[in-house]
Image 1 (cartoon, rainbow, N blue to C red):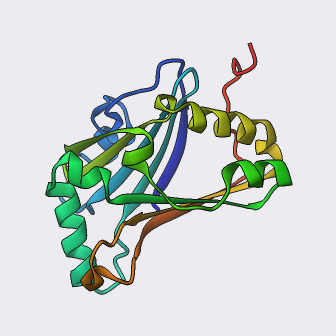
Image 2: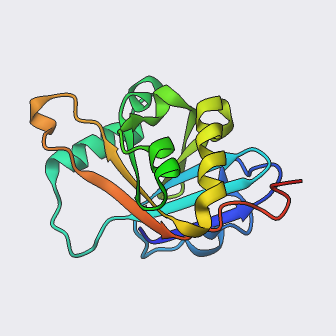
Length: 188
């Protein structure tokens, strides 16, 4: 992970990688010595965006199986992508109520939430509409109420569908400690 930010806005920003003044446009687009970025943009109605930026570790040797899977994901169609991007949530430090609400069961994002995929200038954005699921919004409400006393973890993987693709490899992960998840107007 090379970046993680919240952007509070009543109307979440779509296609955040192309947004003027955004991280990609200001620090990445058009530059010569830059890594490929994989961006997840969680859009939450009446809250804004939670955005995570991933880049390949420069010290890691290439993994041909992972490289193939990532290339097929980026170059594939939405039907393929909707069956591949997996998220594993976790609350390693937090109360029972929020741990029970979030759980730690893996989920394929494209089968649970409306998801859009956007290719950019040496980047790829996964735009996730959290508001497209009443279940996801309910979980968010529970998490937001306990955010000041919890740690939130998310791991992202590309789902392996064949024996040749195993073992699954983590695309990237984040851990946010006591995250500020809600804007000032959340309880209005």
